[in-house]
Image (cartoon, rainbow, N blue to C red; front, side, top):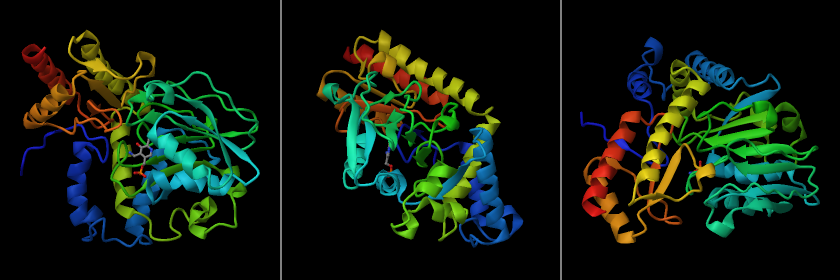
Length: 360
Ligand code: PMP
């Protein structure tokens, strides 16, 4: 088998190696059943055990209170962009959006089809290189939507914003979910596409408070009502079984690492190594403001586009893959999610140091 290389992809992204090894076995035969995990009926005993384990581990890891449901949906995080306003934003109501990058812009654009969506804060003035501290809410009685980590711009909320009384907080946590502890009781809804910190693409984790499930619109398609999925344990239709299985394995791996506090320490150590180097470098600069830096996506430039290109191509040749930044920022981006190994950061810093010596 070919060697694995160092994968800085922003998503789908690197998964824990023990998870991949176990999946290789379970693809062939799950728990000695003689049927692979992708081939089991979602209504059979073997898959139901997988589902129950995945939900239980999710609840345990994030200490999810009893009045929240854990759902596994399809359509990606992008489908939550419209499902949330369809359920909770009536035509005569306003929802507040904190705009910190491309994904929150996409989310607010969808909301505008259903009701009034108010931009309560924005960092567009500086190409989204910071998390705005100032928030001017409308008199919303619906919800406040924010993106906890901005995958493209490399910024992250240090903690959740306060939302006005009478509203609930909705978080797109696609690129930093379970990278650190979070207090679910502060949120109405947390959602995340799996393909960065949780598993393969094709499954979206939604954690939603019970009263909101009840309040959601009932005059919209059945599949878009949260109650449909909550009442049927995410099995109203065929759920993304393989994605749920991998998520369960990833949860189990996070638990083995010591849970969310321990993962946070590891993530901090990894990110600090890379930012520490960037801060000492005379060639490379981080693009995000220091107090808004993401632990998951580290964005940086040399200030010279040709040199950036040279760096990316030489890094790729050296087995450091996926470092090209998103086109809206340019330069480089190192995505270093939970499963990204610390040794990969050491290799990158070593490579950057050598590149700086010969190109600085
Ligand atoms: N939100 C964030 C923060 C993301 O990074 C992404 C995808 N990279 C999305 C939403 C969209 O997710 P999906 O592709 O699952 O629709």
